[in-house]
Image (tube, rainbow, N blue to C red; front, side, top):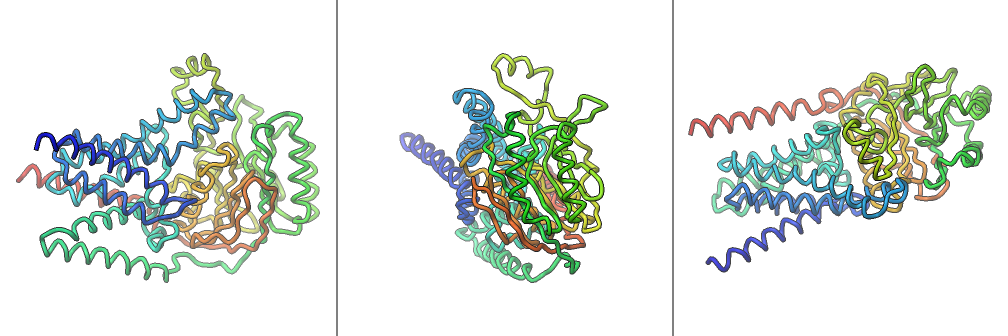
Length: 495
């Protein structure tokens, strides 16, 4: 028996690695969404059968390291190719982050085994979702590869307007636990588990018939312009005019549209240094009455602050300043501590300022636009703050930082989830793809090829009203989770 134990332990740890490594393939561009359910069923089963919290921690850590090690290792591309850092340091910093976020599933296993062993089947789905939620805000947050987002192509996505992607994560967890309990020798547990799976399946179909928001009857003809400017030359001073000419030529046939959108920092310069470009756009806008948006650097002449921004030119100039900045990319957290070692390693860090959280929408005569830039679309709670005023959601991005990796596909999938959660069309304008027009149900109406100059031109519908998720966010889920865990803690102390 003693000789067999190390072999069993090795197999369990190998299974944890294997199941974690499957999770990224449930997301785009692979979209084998059932693998999330399968992977969670395996790790949950391993945790249920594990007696020590230490071993549950190790199993969870291996699961997480495989999941994130495969799913987000593209982070090194921007550091290596465009950060002026060697591949060694790029991989080192990437896997430091992966090593940190792998702690989240590790802690789920540890806490479930140590404190909730008697109610582990109830506690595991809750603890898993709480770990995802925590990962979305601790140390600025990294809300990537949430299990719920993997379900954009499954019927479970119909829960998005009701409970958001964290809620869908919870449902996938419940389904995984139920699948385990179907094999229980207890007939009642079998019946309950099978009933839960049937309820989830039927509910997901019925929810598709509900229209949570209202079509206003108004449409906009939009043109999303993709310039495909190589990232390595995008910010060169002598490239500015060439990039502007490329975007101008692509846009010229579409000045009869209602709205033209250029991507994040398509005008790769500070606003006050681009007056000649802006004046040309002003003339075209005034003669056509076409609204114009572009990513630009908004510099505050009264201070040293500058912002990653979107400019809207209608009858005036307005700015949306990005407020959810990318740590180590757009600003340096813990600057006093980290600035010196990063300087010694010759690692360049931008120093953008954060915009005000209250400045989310552009209110115009053609509709109200809920704005976000790049990485902000990963934060469901941030996007819903545009509701209920926004009639449409607009995101400008530049995924050229991540080359020909799976990152742009994952980013597009996240945008689809935001569209479903809020019951709004979602317009995604990017530098080199994947630009997309997504309807209020999360379906991609049109999308651009990657790494090519392209314009997406289509009529889009404006919506009003709120979904339950838009209105309440994650609050109902968090209250429910707190209540259930509290009851389990009380029961544990009493009995």
